[in-house]
Length: 50
Image (cartoon, rainbow, N blue to C red):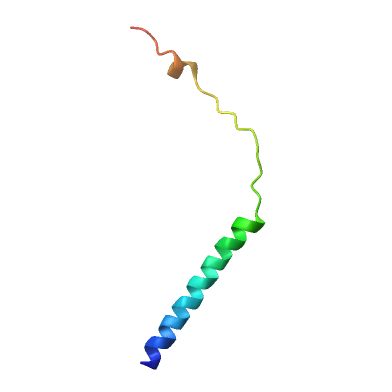
């Protein structure tokens, strides 16, 4: 039984580290806003008529 407890403790610590890093990313990282320009070919907007 001590081996199972040790395994579950290690898994809980790893999950806590992952969760803590996700929380840190949410609070500490600010996304940068920028303009996005996408060129659309005119053939896609006005298909040629047969």
